[in-house]
Image (tube, rainbow, N blue to C red; front, side):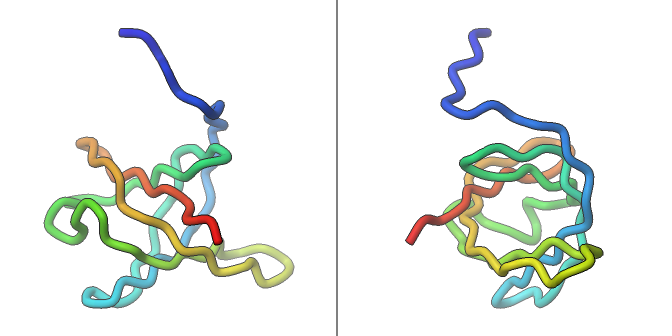
Length: 88
């Protein structure tokens, strides 16, 4: 299979707080990140999230408060979910 990604993925393992309008706050771990989005490890993600939903996220554990970003659920895999960064 050809990899036709527009943005290079970088392995990154950090804690990410996701705020969901129905399920509330979830603390998850990222697997990788690119300029367009992030993949997060979530057990049973398809029962918690739907394609097209918008959630907010904030990296946790930094020495300063990270910005809160809006992300859209775009893809599921057995190990988690891909979230695309929403641009203003």
